[in-house]
Length: 252
Image (cartoon, rainbow, N blue to C red; front, side, top):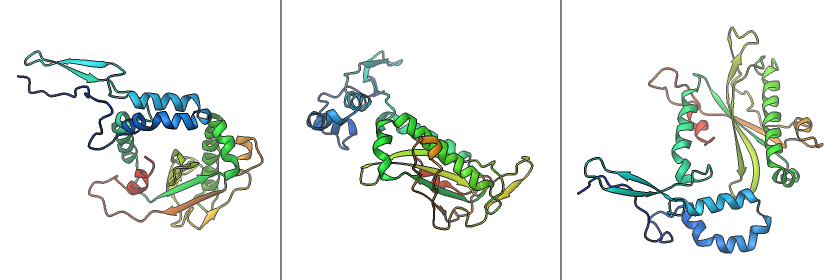
């Protein structure tokens, strides 16, 4: 008898699991959802929904594993591998977060959020590739420009990690960027570390009148950039862990 139990194809893909997955929800409700909203959805969105619906149901085929001990074959439903699928990408998200945590410097960190005016959201949704790229370019240029100001740091050699979020807490379309920014930068000659002030990027909202104009090519702006200094973490047991673990987890 083989004791190496692997996953087997579900007898009924629509049978409710103990913890419903996104794929299960899609299989139950996507026909009605498509009937109402398909004309407003992009081809890519429809393809993603289709892949998630079929993930680990057997509709995408199976992988066959043979036990070395007894020769028993096990069929395992193939995953969709889509980057939007929480079943397939959960472990990759954890790996990404672990990589970011390993890069943290022993200094304070700030979570900086860039948002766009509501009037631009329709344009951005219609041209996501170009506009998302423009948002990142404008935000990065803004951070470097501010860091170069002697009132803040005095050097443009600022490191940061940025992540795009396209939905707000109410699940409405709300594209915005989160940046994890260290409280300091390398000097222009790369020879020394220049720490920021304790209130770097933290005094209320900073408004930019035209930082996105040259990138998005419309007379508009990022509506606000908010920053707050994260509370100091407890002293780490290992050197080099630094601060920033809390805001880093919010990038995921």
